[in-house]
Image 1 (cartoon, rainbow, N blue to C red):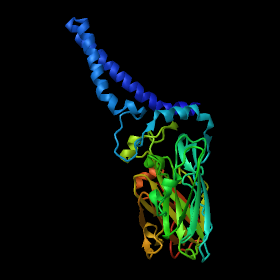
Image 2 (tube, rainbow, N blue to C red):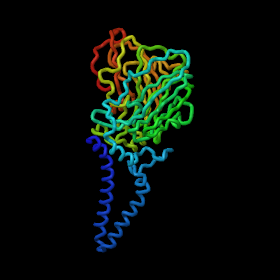
Image 3 (cartoon, one colour):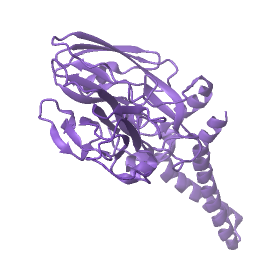
Image 4 (cartoon, one colour):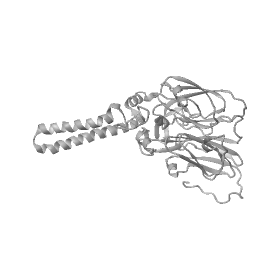
Length: 408
C-alpha cells in the first residue's frame, strides 16, 4: 500500500497544481474586479475566464483522460506514450496482484549454449509477457513490463535457415496488450502483427531465420517506445551454419533507459514520465535492467581465457558507446553482422538504439574491468558493471601498485 501511495503522488501533484492555478487565477480576477463594485459583472467575468480557459485546455488534455494532461505527439499510435487514466485505475485496483520481483536483472551469465551443428533445425521458443514491480535502484521501485520477468528478456540462439516457432503468452494479470517485433524476422511488423496479445491470450508465429547476425527483439504494441522504456527488449542471435568461433566465456548485456517522474534516486514507487521519454532525458541509464546488477563479481573469467560479450541497446533514445576500461576489443562484430569481417583492435564501439554487437577479447591481466557507456556522465545514472578477472599477473605487460579507482 505504501508503494502504491508513492506512485499516485505524481497524479496528485499535477491535478492539485491545475486546481490551485485555476482557483488562484479566479480569486485574483475576482478581487481585482470587485473594485468595479458590480457583483454581477464580477461573477460574469470570472465565469467567462473559466469558460475560456477550459475551452482552450480541454481539447488539449481532458478528453483523453490521461497522464500527463495535454501531451502532444505525432506517432502512428492513437494513444501515444501517455498513460490512460483507466489503466492507472486498473493498476491501483489490482496492485496486490502484481508480482513483486526482488531482482529484475537478467543474469549476464544466462547465455544459451553455443551452437555446433551443421544442419538446420526446428526451434520452439516460449516467451511470456509479465508486468511486475521491482527496483531500478535501491529503494526506487518501478512497474516493469518484461519478457519472462527480467530485463532484458531471454537471449535466443538459433541458426541461419532454422524454422522458428514462437509461442507468446501475455500473462492474465497484465494490464496492457503486448507483442514481439523480432528484427531478425522478414514479415509485417517483424512478427508483431501476428503476436499482438491481450492479457490472458497466447499467439503463435512461425518464421525462417534467413539472415545471420545479432538482432534486437522488443514489444511493438502501441506505443512501442513506451513499452520498451518499461523494459521489453532482448536479443536473438542467428548464427551461421556451424556456429561462432569457440571462446571460453560468454556474457549477455543490454543497455536501457528508464524515465521516471521522480528525480534520480527518489525513493518509492515511481511513475514513468512520457514527456521525459519524448525529450530523450532519462533519469536512469543501466545495463540489464537496474543499477548495480553485478554484486559479488557475478561476471568472472580467468587470465588467458577468451571472452565474448553480446551487447544490445534497448534504447529507446540514446546511442551506447560501449567500452571496457583496461581492455581493447580484439574483434567487434560491427552492428551485429556475422557476414562482414570483424573490426579489430577497437577501444569503444557504438551500439545504436535497437541495435546490437558482440565484442571479443582475451584477458591478460587479473583485476576488475569496468564496462561502461563512455558517455561517462551516464555512469552516475547507473550505466556500468564489472568483469572480474582472476589469475597470475604478467609484469611485462602491466606493473605497478594498483589502487582502487575513483570513477573512470
